[in-house]
Image (cartoon, rainbow, N blue to C red):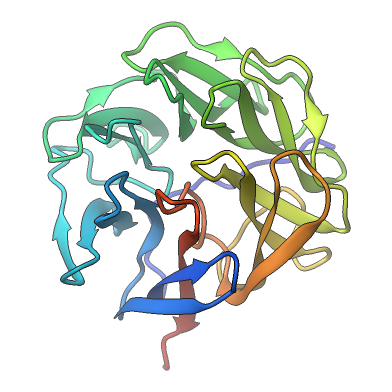
Length: 294
């Protein structure tokens, strides 16, 4: 099955966005803020004080204490989608920015405090997802010769390395905290499922086996749990992760096995695209949505 990936372009959706956290042990949800426009994909900073989200092509830092947002200066990179990832020391952020020349996504980095972007992947389209714990390597999904596979590249730029070679969409690569594994999602067995491989691409192993479409696995900082977002079978094509759907946030052990549903919500695209675990591995940040009244 050759799945075509829908480009993750900067969107303007007619929604109310609710920035929330959930306690993964109790399921208790906490609303942080509401926005009468689209925001997506919160990262939790390693000091526990801020969330970083994207909105209308820019990145913003949300201070948890004051509930105030400030824009992060990203130079000319003002068409960023919801693929942003923070460096392990939180000194830099990497983004997927749709370049003005051709509108295709390429990966850039710039200081989290703001500054000029540096191009990392000149070949497009490339969609960022992971930064290795030692800071040396970025992992991403890229379309090359009509197929979407997982690649890595030095964080300062260089030659990319292909890790998957199966027909159909392979997406969402993210490193485990010990750097030994890359988690990702793939349609290779029919539905979208969560997979894990060694960081060099060997021993690719299916980690979820159910009648759902499971996307974007995120490993908790302590390495114990994996969170991901689930679409209902038949509600979406296996290779699609659209907005405005009834979805679930699930967690499972990083060793595999059964899952728990932590949140049921209206969302999808933008809800949980990036790793949004709190530093203590107890909470997840996410975005739920409501359609704006006409």
